[in-house]
Image (tube, rainbow, N blue to C red; front, side, top):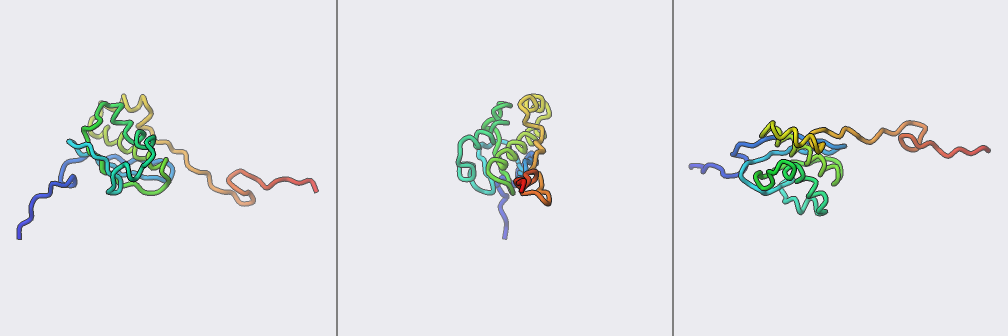
Length: 139
């Protein structure tokens, strides 16, 4: 029994970027010569139905004028829809820098290379939330 060589993106060379935002982690692979965007095996329109999030994910391509030159295959886990889109954007930007280090300057001007490290503050004992204290009553 002979096996045919695979023509799936997994057999090709790719550029990798790991994007993070809040609790979301996006493992992004960019494959040359393609324009499809897959997130967890589904098209971007199914995962991110709101067009603003789709534009956010594709922003690094517009900044570097590489829109339609790469196929994106991403594994997205944790967090919500907004932080997932921002993690994807960060991962794509880092993968583009791995592809061509000269693109880093343009991406940095738009703040796409820097990781946004803000996360939710943990709750403290004796309080209702991280900083919200119970209401004070005089009597």
